Image 1 (spheres, rainbow, N blue to C red):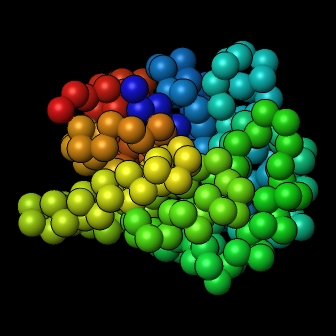
Image 2 (cartoon, rainbow, N blue to C red; image 1 turned 30 degrees about the vertical axis):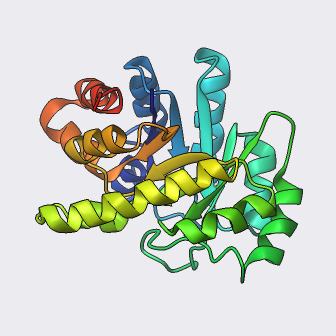
Amino acid sequence: MTKLSVNMNVPALLRNRRDQPWPDVADLGRQALAAGAFGLTVHPRPDERHTRPSDVYALGALIAEAFAGRELNVEGYPDARFLEIVNAAAPHQVTLVPDAPDQATSDHGWDFVKDRALLAEWIEKLRAPGRRIAVFADAEAEQMAAAAEIGVDRVELYTGPYGAAHSSSDARERELSRLADAAQAARAAGLGVNAGHDLTVLGTQQLVQRIPEIDEVSIGHALFCDTLTYGLRETVKRYLAACAAKS
């Protein structure tokens, strides 16, 4: 079954609008894990507009102390600051994304030919026993072999265009086909497959029904939007049901 990692950036962004300690990001992470989420994802950007290094450490400690067998996934652009955070937090998975410092959100994957040297250098620095390395990737089947050659364990397929096609069945089918082709190419190259960005409950269900070999989805924005209606525990359960959907 496809596993669910809850991205904690949205509640951290809400907290940071005021100089107050709530919502409590670590407590929400605890609730998500208690409801059955396999892991938590954080993307501590340099401007700290949402999750901060302190959140990364708190969530890592939460998993280590109370949720053995669950995972922390830390996303970010590979640089000295990111390396310091990863070394201190010791996450189970690191996902490298090609975000500029002022970028609002992740909106494209790496070019694995052009960025090969950069990625190879940082993968070597970030590699540790028991740690999985993933890279953010556009749904381009022809890029998957190049990603495998760099030495990563998984690709995370960028599902933004698929999520944006919610009002057009034809556009959604085109994006699903692109994602399916990329996932198949990744598997053929020996890579695991993650996916994430703008996934709703329905979008997640349709995605995993079409591409059941997806190992993990990372979901934040839509999940926490649904939390306003259903509460966090119930929302996590709804996404878990979508992840388990059969075609």
